[in-house]
Figure: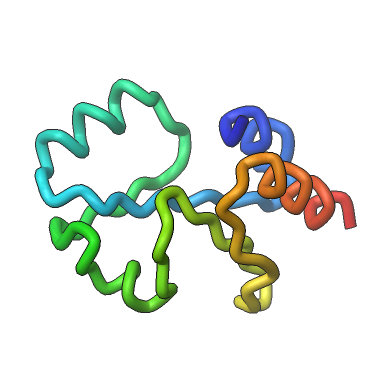
Length: 93
């Protein structure tokens, strides 16, 4: 679903950044290559104790944050159907 949304809205400004909470770099790289994701993936090696997990208080996996161009967090979402709906809504403004 995210790949389709990315393909549809990337030219209109949609940027996706994945943050891995893996603590094993090789496992992370295998999974990333297998998934063939067209966006950036971040790996800090700290697992669930990483700085971004703490910064965004991410308590579920996966969790998605929709961030507006001005840096404001528009939504924190754990449900994929809701994520699709919110991305579409924001991108069609």
